[in-house]
Length: 280
Image 1 (cartoon, rainbow, N blue to C red):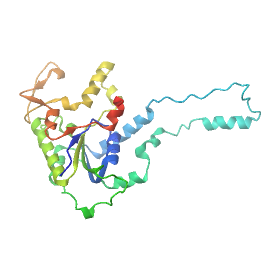
Image 2: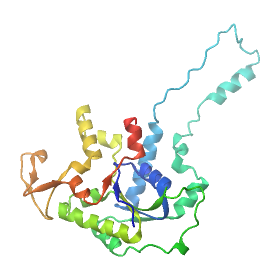
Image 3: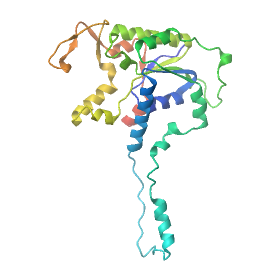
Image 4: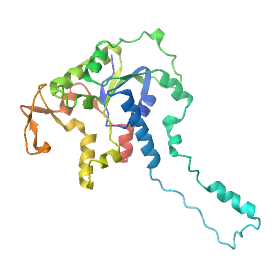
């Protein structure tokens, strides 16, 4: 029997890859709901942002000594060498220190057992799910890893950016989303994999280009990280009611929250990155 499908909070591409590397077991499939180029560009953008905005941590203060305690050396060469060594290298970047860029043995072995698929449209996604292979026989599985505890990991079917793939299309409705979700759950059941859904989290720099005031930025961030509260029409092809502005437009007919649709099959859980952000 397949594990219960889950939904995790919105995550950056680097957080997505880190989660898959930690929790996956062979065979695992990662479905990216965008083109390969866009996804790789988002990873580069995230890595560059993390390198220029490192996490703020309290640095230990060095004890200062007086001139009486440590007199300066008389040899000018000895005095100059430590200063030159302590100068930061302008060519060195914290980008090289990101865990995903460190080729550990575990990371190299694990990445080889992950099948990555890019689906830029809903048609591509549904066509791939319709032809998804069933569970692989046990004799073809990768060798068991002795350091993994039984039940700690399981094969995954990870989908990244499913809602954004449906947005602004004729399938942006409860009917369209339920059709895709039902296919995902069926594939997870037949292939005995845990279905995991992520949405993409927007970096702070890209949000600041769209909003100017601090209060507005907080609203946009909350909406982006809680897409499950959005309302969608029940049927595909529903039209919006005209309004004075975009915010006043609504859907014609009945609507329903996206989270209510997802709760029919999925369980909402917390991710490691959301727990760190909340301080829990």
